[in-house]
Amino acid sequence: MNRTGTDKKQIFGWVMYDFANSAYTTLIVTFIYATYFVSAIAPDNIHGTALWSRAVTLTAFSVALLSPVLGALADHGNLRKMFLFISTLIGAAASAMLWFVKPGQVYQALIWFILSNIAFEIGMVFYNAFLPDIASEKNIGRISGIGWGVGYIGGLLAMFVAMAGFINPEIPWFGLSRESGTNIRATCILVALWYGFFSIPLFVLVKSIPGNPKKDSSKAAIVRAAFADLKDTFKDIRSYREIVTLLIARMIYNDGLVTIFAFGGIYAAGTFGFSFKEIMIFGIVLNLAAGTGALIMGIFDDKLGGKATIQISNIILTLAVILAVFATDKEMFWTAGVLVGFFAGPNQSASRSLLGRFVPREKENQFFGFFTFSGKLTAFFGPLFLGILTQMFNSQRVGVAVVAVFFVIGFLILSKVDEQAGKAAAGK
Image 1: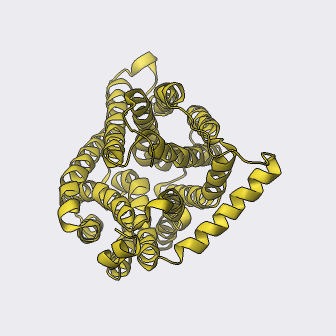
Image 2: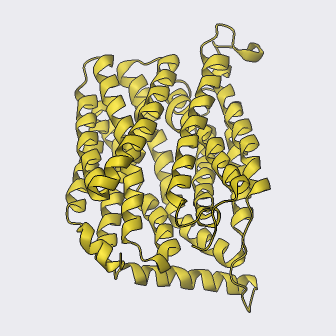
Image 3: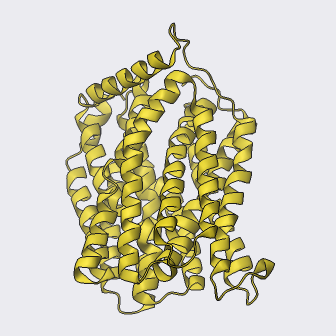
């Protein structure tokens, strides 16, 4: 890294994008619209859960295929900022289109959700790629952490606005009807406006740094160079055993996290009868727990190491899922939810820091790009199996139980990682 990492305007612009797009994951993917789809748009909870799982599965599969290719094209064509703008525009616009979908219009809802979710995930690839440009080697972790924290704040504030304006009031803002569900669908408009408006600082303040000039800048040459880079990345990564094992383990336990995030609100509503208001409160508490957990466990990460931090989180997450499956009342489910929230953040942040310890400095960009790709490569398995088991046994509890299996398998694979050997291979 050769950046100074001291341009506060660029850092502010970059951080605000996380503030902007967190409204999408919080209100549409996890808590409000997902629950509304299952309970009001789909014919029943069981079919709704299965259909939503297939939509999340298709998103993950599409992002796994598209992200490395588009990322390589962006690198070679200096198209990162343009690709991010297009992704943001599509994500916000498709979110707004969910407002027009009425109960019974299942496939219209799924089409707009899949399109918005793919755009969101692809946008994150380009957003993350800006980090090495705005940060230095000394402060990249702190700036990344600030972005993570501000994202939680953005999601929480968006939820507060949704609760205060559309969910809780007897008469929602703008006179929207509670009976017809227009007050719930209005949160999609809120997401679109939030997503679009708060993204502006990034496009205004963050500079797009050109890559190395190419002798042949034709479209065909850019495409050839991009695919050549992908081939080289696959060749290089096989030389680092600890990285490969870490990425395989993460692919598995990350499936568990993806599934929890996508179906937490749906499970709370379908099995425990949570109202929209209760789901909103549940989401706020989980976000607060996740932020607190990431902060506290970050200290343990430095002292105990990334592997130990991930393994602790995998154990607690497994126990929390089991508790949620066998919970007999809302209080037990709340306990499980808070545990999941507290240890989900450290699980993700420690995975990134552990890879950072294993990656040679001259290959940081390549391997972190592959890190993003691997996170989506098999992310459809969790939602897919949850949906299949829910339908097969006509029970959300059975579907959710599969999540614990992913954490256990991830734990067993990660136990094979030698942290010291990984550092030695990286020359650290």
